[in-house]
Length: 479
Image (tube, rainbow, N blue to C red; front, side):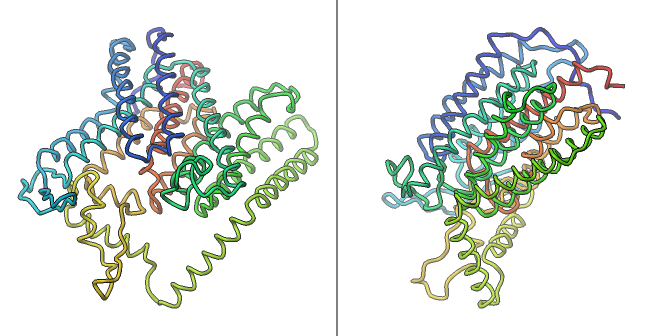
């Protein structure tokens, strides 16, 4: 059965609602990214508070942005996995799996007697807070799909996303070059030595930057397609290329090895795509492609050299650290501690496979399953607040049911788009960035960062709406 057609004509776009949605999203994005990526308690409180306006806008848009009579309330059709996920977590909050015992300022968890066949939460209050933050982020981003019907407005959202990311990258690059030991040029002590720009953890910055670079590439290829043979040097195309370059430079400077590789794969794929496009265009005009191809390869080599030069010291340090880690693993003749962490997390998920131990329970419950214990009690035991694998942590916290609902939250709207009729590269590059981060979540925990979650869902819903709007404006591509 073919997917329902959600690109059917809608009511006329409400200009004031569109402006309010863009303003709300932009302010939420800028605050979250500059406030340490949202990874401090007070920033999370502001996100939950200001993001609540997104829930109100979602309700208003649901009433005013109706569709044709045969296809009403698409938000309910696309978001029912979110509503079931909310129900799962809410039920768990009223079925605590542990009781809190206070000894002065210390809090200890003692196993309670929950209803075994219902979802339960180890820390109900923390689960409720995390659930609300997740909902306000998702709905604030979904408003971009629900309200914005113009591709021009959707591209303006991408310009805001990438412009903000470039400003952060330039800020972080200068901060790194002057060897600041703390955030905001030493104004704020860094809780983690592996920080970059305003982000507390360099791998979170890397994930954030990969998605924004994908957005830059989407705009670059859109502008290239619309260039109409004008002078490249006097068009916005070079501005998009420069933005991608500035973002790319920041990743090796942040010392994120994994995201440097991901960035290389993304840019390498885009370079191959561009070379292929140039060759096809030249052949269609019966012209030689040698000069522009060689010029592009030279420019790419020059850019890679500049990135390597600026990040030489950081790259050398990380290579040395990698060599030392490999030597330690070989000498110990044991599995990597990360693999042991994954195995222990899987055992935690196995203990409660259906609904897990409760949202935001990992840091408190994993201690029971952590096998990386010292032989002597006085030796410090490694503490893990995150599983360094978002997929496994989701299984451990909300079980297979909750994780499947999160997967459906992404898969369901993708199924509603007739992708074979979409020719624009904008949604394809945006979704490429999303896919890279979803794969990266098997090795790290990018979705523990609110700024990464916000960017992920924003680019995801913009890609979907952009694809659907292209089909609406080019009905000759549809059957």
